[in-house]
Each structure stands twice: as structure tokens, then as C-alpha cells.
Amino acid sequence: MDVVLVVLALFALFILFSAIKFVPQGRQWTVERFGRYTRTLAPGIAFLVPFIDRVGRRLSMIETVLDVPRQDVITRDNAVVSVDAVVFIQVIDAAKAAYEVENLVLAIQNLCMTNIRTVVGSMDLDEVLSQRDSINARLLTVIDAATEAWGTKVLRIEIKDLSPPADLTQAMARQMKAERERRAQILEAEGDKQAAILRAEGAKQAAILEAEGRREAAFRDAEAREREAEAEAKATDMVSQAISKGDVNAIRYFLGLKYVEAFGELATSNQQRTVIIPADLSGLAGLVEGLRALNAQGDAPGPFGGGPRTSVPPTR
Image (cartoon, rainbow, N blue to C red; front, top):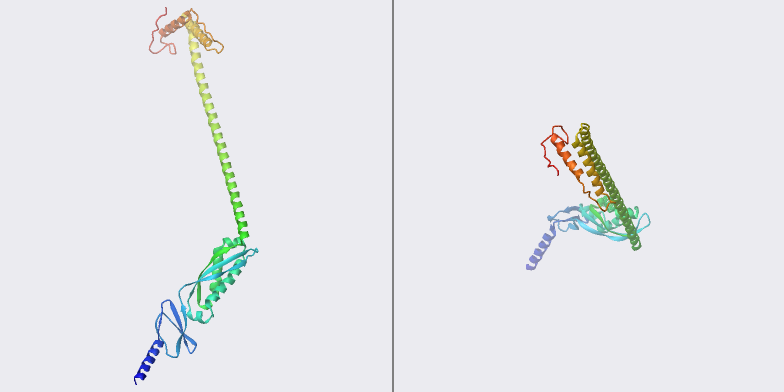
């Protein structure tokens, strides 16, 4: 009797554990009844009919990363490149993922490899190396549409590496170096051109400013000479009027002035090394006396009259 009770207790525990299932978070299990799919168990506790229902497939509903094996692909311009990729997938329908494809991971890897050959093979090498985003977008569109029937969503696909052959890589490096040298020469030539233009503009502005300075100086010199000539003409006119009236002092002033001018030219001559000063300086005395007398006349405007009078000591 005790043995029978123990056997019955063990049998009851077996039935209990076979009927109660605990599904972990991020997982979904399929339930099969007599080998046929009936329903999907969500995370948490679930109850099955003992000896009739059983768990079929245990699937992860978390995003999964798959590596696409490296392969050699021939581009449209007959260049061989080595390509590998990585794809991110997530199961959204456990029943389809379990029963619509035999090996989901292998199927997606092969699908990615064939589509990489198709997309890369339709492009030139330069396009393949420079348009990774375009390749990724095209692959994602095609592969996601193909895996929809398998209850799987392709979230992203990224080209991990694109490796041309070694000789092609060296040729590309030489081409890049030549292009950079060409650009450097162009930039240097442009810099020399701009420098020459700026120097020419500076020389032009300097010449213009120098010419304007010479013109201004010439204008100032001409104006000064004109004023000097006017003053001299006015003085000569006044002396002439004084002479016409018989003024002896005016005659003395005129002769003394000419005497001083001639003596100054003689003293400043480049060919004159020795200056002989005449002993008779009566001409200078006459000049001073004439200035004193003309200044004493006083009322007429001009250089010989008007304003406060200045006394000149008589010469001896």
C-alpha cells in the first residue's frame, strides 16, 4: 500500500510539472497537440493538457545580431572586392518563424549573401567604395521584404568591410596621392596669382598716391611762386611810383635791393670758391636808409606803409 501511494504521488507530480509551464521574458513557445500547432505561449505561467499538449519550439523574441560570412564579389567594372556584413533581426511571429522555414538563421545568412552579390555586382568599384549607405538601404529593403513571410523583421543591415585586392589598393593610393598633389599645385598657383594681383594693386595705389603728391606739391609751389610774384610786382610798382615822384629814398632802396640780390647769388654760386666782400658797403647803408624813409611815410597801404611805424637807426 505504501509503495502504491508513493507511485501515485510521483505520478501526480509528473502530471503537475508537465501541465504547468513558465515561459521566460523575451521568449515565446509554441504548443503542439498531437504534433499540430495550436497556440503560442507568452512570457509567464501557462497550462497544458497533460499527455496531449507539448511544447514545440522555443523562440527568442529579442533583437539578434547575425554575422554574414565574407565573400568575394565581382563589380560591374570587373573588380573583385571582399565583402562581409552584419544584420540585425527580430522575430515578430513565433509560429511563422518556427514552421515557415527550417533553419531561420541559415536562411537569412544565405539571403543576405546572395543579395550582397546582386547589389554590389550592379555597381562600379568607385560607387561601391563611396556609397555604403545606398548599398545598406537597398539590401534592407530587399531582405526585409523576403523575411516577412518567415515572421521576422530585419531592422538593420550594415556592410562591415569592403576590401579591394592589394594591387588595386596600391593603385588607388597612387591615384589619390597624385590627385592631392595636383590640388596642392593648383592651390599654390592660386595663391601666387592672388599675391601677384595684390602686389600689383599695391604698386598701382602707391604710384597713384605718389603722383597725387607730386601734383599737390607742384600746385603748392606754383601758388607760392604766384603769390611771391604778386608781392614782388606790388613792391616794384610802389617803388616805381616813388621813383616817378622823385623820391631819392626809393631809388636808394631799389638799388640796394638789387645789390643785395646780386651779392647773394655771387656767394651761393657752385663755381665760386672765394667770396670777396667789397669794402664800400654804402649800398647797404643806402638800402637801410631807404627802408627807414619809406617806412616813415606811413599812411599808404602796402609793404611800405600802414600799421605801427618802426624806427631804423641811421647809418654812419
